[in-house]
Amino acid sequence: MNAVAHGERGLPGIRSTRWAPALASLLALALLAATVEIVLDGAVGHSSLIPKSPAIAGWLSGVGERLGFRVFLIALLVSCGAYAGLLAIAARTRGRGEAVISRRAAIALIAALHVIVFAGPILLSTDVFSYIAYARMGVEHGLNPYTHGPASISHDPVFYYVGHVWRHTATAYGPLYTLISYPLAPLGLEGALWGMKVIALAASAGTLALTWRCARDRGLDPTLAVLIVGTNPLYVIYGLGGAHNDLLMMLLMMVAVSLTLGSLASSRREAGAAATIVAGALVKATVAVLLPYMLLARRRVAPILGAIGAILAGALIAYLAFGSHGVNIVSALNRDAAFVSSDSFANEIAHLFGEPGVFPVDHDLLKAGLVIVALHVAWRTWRGYDWVAASGWTLLAISVTSTWLLAWYILWPLPLAVISRDRRLLAATLAVQGLYVLHQISPLLAPVQ
Amino acid sequence: MSSAAPTRRADPFSSLPEPLRPLAQEPEDRRRTSTTWLVETTLLVLVAVLLATATIHDVARQTGINDRLIADLATWRAYTGHHYKNVDIDQQLLGPSSEHEVVCGNTSPGPPKRRTQLCLAIWGPEHGGRRTVHGGWYIPPGSEDQRADRYGCFGAGAEGICRR
Image 1 (tube, rainbow over the protein chains, first blue to last red):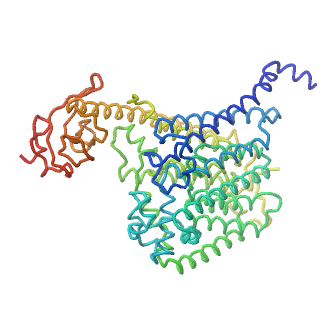
Image 2 (cartoon, each protein chain N blue to C red):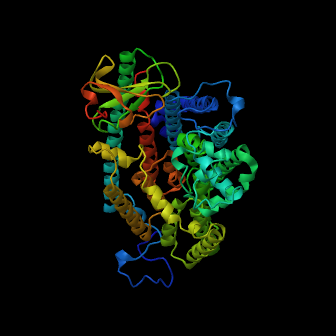
């Protein structure tokens, strides 16, 4: 029967078996080469894409040339093309019960990408210097980062590196994250920078390990799941490259999800999961959206008690450490929600309809749209829809309706998308990421000067 | 295994009408065929089309702006004969959506804005990588392009812009 079945499929199957490993190797090399190009050029120093930074990657600086838009965009497009090709091969061959990209090869590729970016400079964002500035404000200067912006420590060496837009802005990050960052402050600027990179690397490794475990617990292919997350160009270049605290938030998100899955699921673990979501929200508030869906899906007392306990403990710690301002994260989020970035879909749609940009009424419309999506998926969760997918849809909707969209925001739903039971979420997440990358390419279309 | 009936023992929601009762898991047969799934998928496709259209439109818009600004720089350099790198373009002064720009740069070699600067008001269609200069003014070394500092104004592009 097997022989007949193979014979009926004919040559395409045999051909694909032959070319798939070679093509997958080629695509993996292209992904690595493009990442190396960005890191080596980035190591040369400050450019329109590389923030001013202490020379932590100076030993790499003799090879490349200063990173400009054209080279970066070509490398990014090569990365995205190779990534798409790899996923297509992995998904197609998996469907036939083959494994062209083995578990070992996938992990080796992800590890290589992580090491390359970890060794390099800070890429594409000054946020990490804001993190360090807030830590140094609290530890070295005795100032509350929830009431002061980095401009209040303009004599500190980190101030020079903080993005202009954020120099007078108090932190919008959660009190748990601020406390986690405090031990890095006495290490000096370079020490703190490496500390932030280590946190980002460890958080990414943890997120990937938990993605693997969750995929396995749900009967999905764990190799494909970690390949989709761990080789994602936006995840590697923007997320890890910028040492963003979103990775730490995503780690706590995946800890929470993993606690609710598998044969060991229990009331205690569900309470722990709810508490972990609250802890994640005390790093970066966005992840709080998981909590209502988990509670709706579980409908037990234990996670509610876990969440309440964590909220009370978190509020107490935040109040003791930072006073009432440390507890009031909502006002900081409202402030940031009013910002507009040129890459936001809201801004693009405004341009499409002939408007110069987003108006206050548009903010209200976008919030209304987000509420409708959240209520719909909440209703669906109540009626048995996968709460992990519901959480992913809401995180995706937040990034799509946000007027302040940055590349690392569209990473939030990705680990949930690869383990969700609704494959539309993965398609939608990757499509949104694809459109984000497409929106970057206009400098490539300008004539070379 | 899945069932439309509530799965809890002593279900506190059992008094609710069936369509409002919570379910432990969506029935398998409803996942891909229900009206809800079809409506959701249709809406997702429509949103995807809107986002894709907006993105492509914005890339084209940005490309047009880039081309225009490159032409403005080339125009300033051709007009002054100086091939300086640090030349500023102001897209706001003559109207943010007007496609009329003001381009300022030093009139002699030196650090940016540390020499007398010549500002040109530029608009109109692009021909051969350049646009038309409709006027201009000078500003002293070390000054930003403020009304009080402008002098030596000329052409229609300077009308209402300079102090006199």
